[in-house]
Amino acid sequence: DIQMTQSPSTLSASVGDRVTITCRASQSISVWLAWYQQKPGKAPKLLIYKASSLESGVPSRFSGSGSGTEFTLTINSLQPDDFATYYCEQYNGNFTFGPGTKVDIK
Amino acid sequence: EAQLVESGGGLVQPGGSLRLSCAASGFTFSNFEMHWVRQAPGKGLEWISYISTRSSVIFYADSVKGRFTISRDDAKRSLFLQMDSLRVEDTAVYYCARDTGGKDYWGQGTQVTVSS
Image (cartoon, rainbow over all chains, first blue to last red):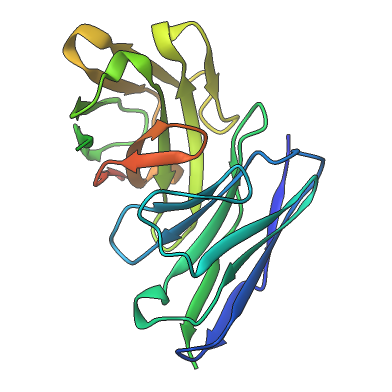
């Protein structure tokens, strides 16, 4: 089974900061990776699919990159609405979520 | 707009059974692959099951294989999860989600609590 790791597990940032979250797969998953945002008590929201494709309606300050085993989610100019937990998910034949990265207020 | 609504959660004793439902609207349900994903209290997301269109391909996570059964009724625009031999560690919010390469629509979730 493919295992996913994320770093950091928690990230403290301020409004306006540029934030980068890293996701690593235990084996190559090509570009079959998605990123989600989740707020407490709510369902996850798809941000990025196929490693770098922005989901419709998602602000352009969110971007994804990477292929193979290493991927990044970048949030340019962090906004108050962006404080949340972010998960990566691989979907290369099977499905696995990363453990999550909580972005909180510094 | 697409909408997914889960139901069927509740409190059940260890060893018991529950059947979750997910009602779809606002899109052609039969054209989409579907998933169940769960989240234990204070924990991350765990994918648990996938079903393709026409139910031709089904996958399960190892944690539920042999105990849970996913199914769909395209005529009723519904997805199901039959959960048997429930364990305390199955306690979680259960979500259904639509697959478009990434899961673009999710339900609001239904709480399943397994406790004596």
